[in-house]
Length: 306
Picture 1 (cartoon, rainbow, N blue to C red):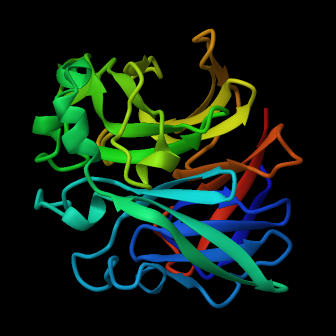
Picture 2 (picture 1 turned 90 degrees about the vertical axis):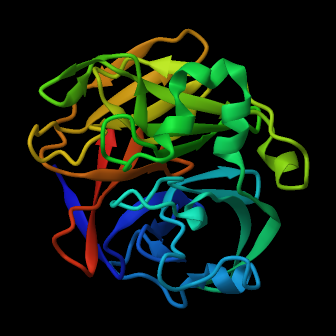
Picture 3 (picture 1 turned 90 degrees about the horizontal axis):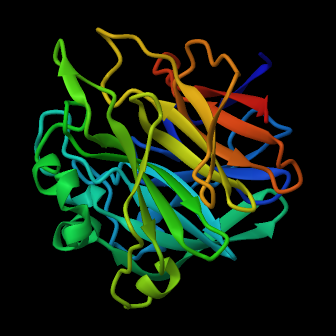
């Protein structure tokens, strides 16, 4: 496996291509975005400071991190989503309940800036709780449980659809399943299809399609990326902290039209995949970013053929 190391970010948690050369990365430890040139090993400067882009509506400091976890592009709008989880101790974290969009501009060669698109959406879980189609997913209970505990709440995936919707992927909770030795087994991963993200950030009420549950061998969604047509690449991983019961991450191709799921044979070894995206002209090579928590100044990147 050909692994490349990039410096300037460590806790990578979401990423999306800007074009065939540049990609933009979120770190779940702060409210900043960094642009990388795939041909260079270090983050470009300056970073995009979200508190500046949103004129203080997004704040910096203790308990203010959005815990950015997913990214997707629709037209010239780049969407980012927070985990919507509690803290690791189970305390409410309102700053994590964010879905927002930005425009990104290359002002000079290798120097990028951003401006906001519309409002910040903060009511996703509240809207899902009101929608009776999602009642059996237990979001009302999950939002008060630690994100990596059984039945907790953690969003980690975001993908655009060809129809300009968004697929929101949950690492936790899982639907169904049975408990064995304190772990949930055979649960199904949950996808929420938000139909109107662009109008939503312009003030329209959220509209959701029917709930989607996927059998990923008991794993949750760590990221999801649109591949082509109605096909998506899903990074699947354990909903828990992966300490007492080590489970490797896996890749699946999912066809939303037919419902067919196919596992990619790639062995991801011990990589802790947190982000996946495609460069526009390389649709058969998915780029995977790993947050391993070892080096506080870098992250690993690997491309996998589909």
